[in-house]
Image (cartoon, rainbow, N blue to C red):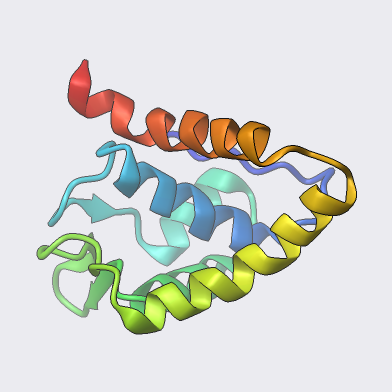
Length: 130
């Protein structure tokens, strides 16, 4: 999977890595048990600090997306991504509130918002139907 870091945006680099790896898992570009580069190799490949990659990997591990083994290295969690539970739904709801509030404030219709969500959702399911 090709990682692309945009140094020109305000989003922290570690956050870009986290989001791209999760997107790769969602699109099935990264499969359960698949290895990721070591912290050192990922940092060298992307031209970024090792601590940045380590921070991204730690967050992914804490969220259940990857395992970090001393011998096997970094792998996508063999059981797959953690399933949505009540805790995740509560976090998702908290994250969606400001997005929805701004959409309503900007007069984006509910229908247009739902269409946008469907388009994004379809993007991640597309690989299965190909």
